Length: 376
Image 1: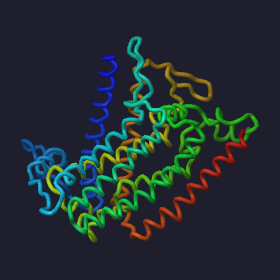
Image 2 (image 1 turned 135 degrees about the vertical axis):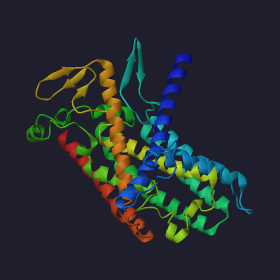
Image 3 (image 1 turned 30 degrees about the vertical axis):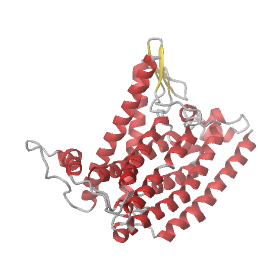
Image 4 (image 1 turned 120 degrees about the horizontal axis):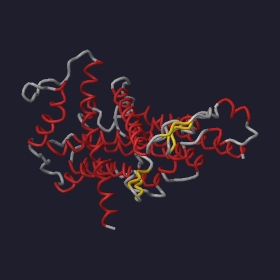
């Protein structure tokens, strides 16, 4: 029992270490990436013994120290307790959501089989949406506790945006659940390790011969669902082009306009942690998770008959590495989108969520059901 608790603690520490460090590196990528896009130099002043690390010292050491040593200001007529609780809620929900995302298959050490997932819940998808939707409470509570009309307006926008896109995001996942028949994220990832031809009946000869050798990743089985999920996930992170809750040009800084010091740093870190979590969900649901094409537990098995046997630790390393690279790619894609697309107007954000994403998500569910019945 003690050993099991220790293993869970180690997995939780590794996941938190990865998410928090990747969130910090994303802050550096955003600053230097935007500088490259806009033909600037970017952060490069702070250094340790002359080593600036292309702005890494600025972003990972100097800026956090600056935030933590600043005055913790609370508005005179604000609620001090709720003002402190809000950024903690935002960061906490972004971190614990990653607990059900598998970062590998299993690690076998002697007679012990370790599932490479912090919490193996059979209702993983429901957990993701239940915990992820709590993040908006941090925004609303923080804005109300600040006693600032600009903060409150940003919170109203944020809650409306969350409701609008949470529905479309949930419906976009229904197709994946129908295809793989489970709510458990680890089983969804394992299901994507098969080939498409293994999911088709013998009567579908044309499909088996054309696309049958492709891995059964969600992107191939549910391409429309991926586009809907990606759009809704970007909207849930509240970043450009969906940063209406902040909107510096309109609301100064929106819901965190009255925050400074360590509390603002928590909001800042929570935003990048949400990016990492969204990237992990995209990877798990639509890009095979930790799967490497044609890689099984004992090595590679190619559809044309050849096989390459690999040791277990090499297979595990390839799986964890594949998951990490996919997550980094989607994090980079979201950062690039933030500096490439202008902000939507509020009415455009609402119209996109209710009049475009929602009908398309419903249509995807109906078409998926028809195709499944027809193939059966």
